[in-house]
Amino acid sequence: MIKLITIDIDGTLLTNTRRLPKKNKEMILKAKKLGAHIALVSGRPFSGILPYVKELDLEHEGHFSISQNGSYIFDNYTKEVITGVFQKPKDLIALDKSLKNFKVQVSAMDDDSFYTRHKNPNILTRFDSFITKLKLQKISYTDFDEDKNFGRFLVMGWPWNIEKVMDNMPSFVNENYYYAKTAPVLIEVMNKNANKGNAIKLMSEKLSFKIDEIMAIGNEMNDIPMLDMAGFSVAMENANDYLKPHADYITLSNNKAGVGEAIEKLIENNFEKF
Image: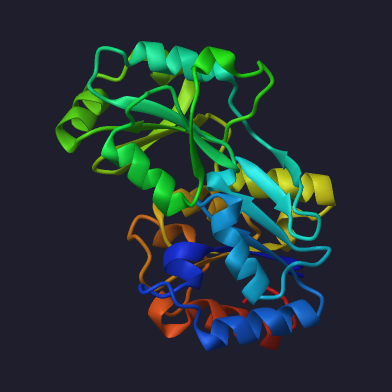
């Protein structure tokens, strides 16, 4: 029986115009009323997830948010971090040093702020701070407390410089981190264990859910670990073609309220897999 539904946000819960379809909201509220726990899962920081937590009335005990692709797990009721997989200032300093010969800037994020050591952050760094709605703080990386937690590091530069980094990634980075080019101007660097799949596993262990009791819904490559981990997995019709073979069920597209359609089917099946 499915007890926890984990839902990706962009391209899954929301339409291409970032609208929350009425049916998605109705079915999530109905599932919640019937006792299901809901977790919104995203690459966004918690501040970027919170508006949808509020709109879906998930600011109550038993509902959660997973931010920064699995780095942080939040209790929506207390707004506190339950657990997570983090990186430390020593990692940031080492990464920054390893990429010093490339024309890129290395910055860091926790779930409150965006940090850079550069007195004149490039326009890409400033823009990313703006779209994530995180305060941009300029600080020497050696000034952080050694126990400081970061969700991810960002390597930012013009596309031709990012390609050079990808083609010549220092062995230190390959050996110690998980990284991916998530935009032509951006490489995200995270703890090797930070992904959506490991996050729902951590959450299930901490909250006593069985993996088989979790239904996951997603659309992109970074959702694959979550779909593989969950007991029942749903891909959107608009999902990346590489993701679809990992799903037990293909629902409608994000523009046609596919999340609502899948949850409605789950409710009709008495929360059993279908």
